[in-house]
Image (cartoon, rainbow, N blue to C red):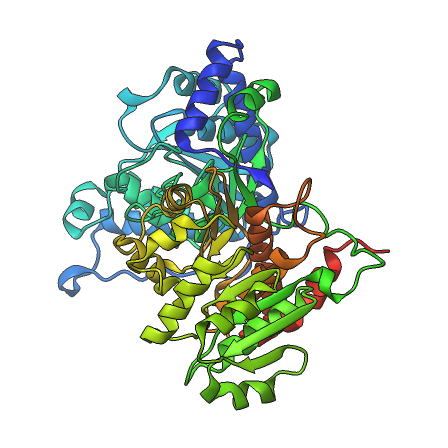
Length: 572
């Protein structure tokens, strides 16, 4: 687990470090800049040395009215050609650093100086915005840049519309844009974690230039245009190859659309006292990201029998949805469940029975009490995959939810059955895990789509209804009743196919049902649910590497589980 912090929490932590502990703000900025410069250096010299580009380029100029260029225009053309073609003979790579007003811009200015002082590369730093809004620390870093022989150039190019392009793209602006096209790396230090409005004007031009020049970008703290807390894209945002974030990760790096702009996220220590950080966060609900399991799955007891590893009851399936129950059952077994009882409607039982070897399917009796009796003998229940929304199915879901005292995982139509009956969830004393995607969550809560702040929405629901909520999507959020939350960093778009959620639901139920995993001193329901999400994503990543995101199927996730679980399980 890696700790996260919201923008407000990080600002308060910085303030306390500076005002209460006497940590120099310039030292913090210098340390941050050094980490950014290191990341840029690795991109400039990916194999330890720089090889100038090979080939040639040409400039295509369309002149109005078909007239030949004037001598002045011809001069501009020759200068432009020289800028572009020089990249093939220059022995040093070129780096551009975009700096905005504020301490994030100060990080960028300092990083430009550090790159300049290392030598062996050409560095230009561009200031975007109003200089009157520069912070004292940023101005101090500009003075150090000047002393090192650099300069902070004004970048007032606004290419966001034809009107502004014609008005503002001066000769110097044209040359700057051409020079940027020859860069081997760019640094994004336009905005910090406090951005809450859409990117516009010259800032938007800078973002578009960084995205459109086919060279890798290093972002300071968070890619400009990404909301630090929600991952929302504020108009447009930088696509970073590497994001160097300071002290703690930010939620927006791992969830929502922002997670697709982060690239490699590196959390670096910039000198905040650890005891101060611990003191500030120890009383707050935990907020973490899980790129991989935090610990290995414990060794299974040597003298145990199948009953010790969980009897799982699954209620799933309906006409036209015979795959969902089978995927859920197979996933539960692959994740270590000892016994899996699979209850399906009588009319699809013959189909499901043929597909099941290890799970034990049975046709649902018409008497709801008989179903409840069978489920009561189990250690965990999964309700909902492919179940349908008939009145009979919804009634059975509500009866089971009200009558079961074991942990219950509600997925798909199990969640839909709660609409208008949330009181039944509130009355449960045993753990309940809900695994909705955004559409199901919106139906259940009345939230508008898209959900702009997935993290807060999940935490608020889990607190209000004393359950574990797994809000699926990019950077799946697992929220606990006490307010803690875990974002998932594994997985890929190849998993966005019908059936992947059934696999996750089966895995979650299996982990909840295994006695040696839960209980005093072990993992609670929220930790087990987050672990299931992480392992599910790691299985997806293994499938993507092996067969590609287009071709992988939900069943392939189950087949990848032996390798994933083997990697993360203790060995005898």
